[in-house]
Amino acid sequence: MGIWMIRRTTASRRMAVLAPMGALALAIVLNFLLYIVMGNDPAAVFYALLLEPFVSWSSFSEVLLKMTPLLLIAQGLAIGFRAKVINIGAEGQFILGAIFASSIPVWFPQATGGWIWPLMLLLGGVGGALWAVLPAFWRVRLNASEILVTLMMSLIAAQLLAYLLVGPWKDPMGFNFPQTVMFQWDAMVPTLIPGTRVNVALILALLWSALAYVYMQKSFQGYQLVVGGLAPHATAYAGFSEGRAVWLSLLIGGFAAGLAGAAEVAGPMGQLQRGISSGYGYAAIIVAYLGGLHPVGILFSSLFMAALYIGGDNAMVSAGLPVAAVRVFQGSLLCCYLAAIVLVRYRLVRDGQEAPA
Image 1: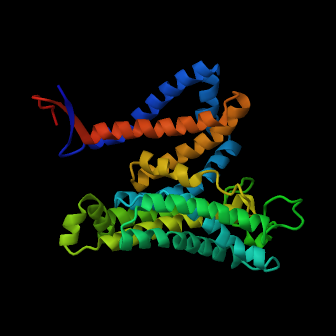
Image 2 (image 1 turned 90 degrees about the vertical axis):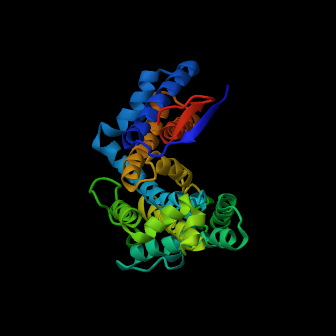
């Protein structure tokens, strides 16, 4: 007797909303058992991991700081994901955005004026978009998988960053560390909340989210992208261009990731370093799917994932949790969510028996 999965004609919105919460509950149970096996105190771990980031203003401000790049990147990626253009190279596009933005303070360290940091952010977005041009070209002209191409280009971006930091952009007074000079004050994004490291980039991330919502939910072009992902042959028959959808998806995702990279070097870091990205490009994939590829859902999932970043640091100090366990929690959360959303969209049918829709 076999069990088959049949796609539901209409998915329950209520269950789609409950799926992330169910996935979180299941991930907590699985990791609870893991922490017991590891010999850690699960109560102390979950307090540090999930609650401590919200108990003080200083820790919550760091959550908002981490939320900014995750929100920017995830909103850009989600547009492509809904069009079935799977860009997993946001990490490389983030790095290129950081490199492009850093070129101004590196080449013109004495420059002053309020125009510097806005131009850095713009250059960062352009750099990320340019790094997505080759995958888009190869996908449209050669039908190459954008998954593989974007992933491989992330590795190239990391090596380009390493070359610059140990070569032409290396700080001569940096005690041989692979980093650039510290940026001048006018190259830094202004602080948004006094007494914290939260900067104006958070406002840009929220505006970007609003634009993503209008584009995907209210515009005809966004509707074309979604329908093109669901039924490419039907859209081609209707005169919609699949190639255009690929170009738009990858360029928007690349621009968002590059903008996030620029905001990172011009914000909390203040210089270009090898550790510029803490895996934001890959974590944003989890954020996008955990938010149901919806701009509003991504807003909440980015906040939650940022809290995991800060909570993970707390758990390593106060509960002795290894950094790999934090990544396991993130990965298990994504797996649980994908399993939950599959059951929302599909129903199980046994041979000779019809399951309820």
